[in-house]
Image (cartoon, rainbow, N blue to C red; front, side, top):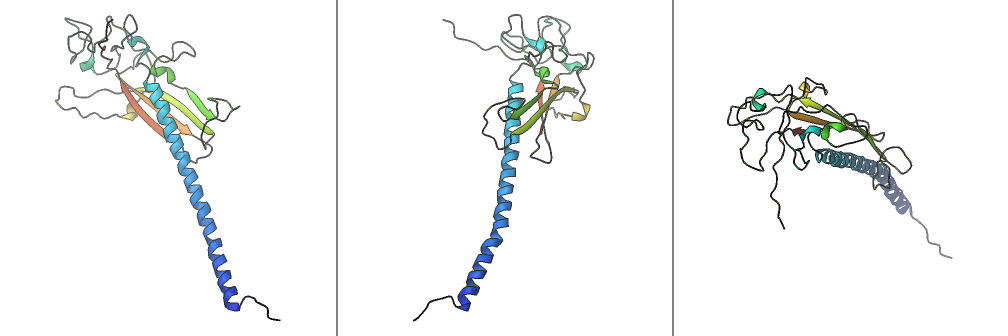
Length: 231
């Protein structure tokens, strides 16, 4: 009776093929780990960007609203560049560079200084209220911002700081090269308010070995009043 079987060449060839296949497993696992780490990094960046965009949607300062609260005005500061101070003659609700026309940017009707941090507990209505704020994007049942999020990372921690930085530059030049010098950042005090607030967001996670630090800046420029259709 004739029986079929593996020849020695076929057996060696099979062993080689299996060995090559097994060698690729660590590479595949390593690539998968890199892909997951990259996804975690992207989640952190996008979530931080969303958080900072949310902060910037708030008005620059608590005292910046006009009398009816519809438009954000420019407020006075205690330690800003003198070139940006309120004009002390003529129309005193403007600064240099403001156009004396209706619905254009201007300062508050009366002198009022920038506020200093959160004025009312648990009430967020301007940028500096977020100073010291902490938030956690966590799985359902954990502390912080809870919910069924489509995240790989279930432990995103955000800590926000808001500080003043120097706005001192030569404003008489036609072209201004401004340096956002973060080393000049100071905490909120009654004598250190300037025209630039720095929002600093620190994003950490137990799933990453290093934190991400994001910074964005917001200026005391008020806003123009838009024309609206009247019925």
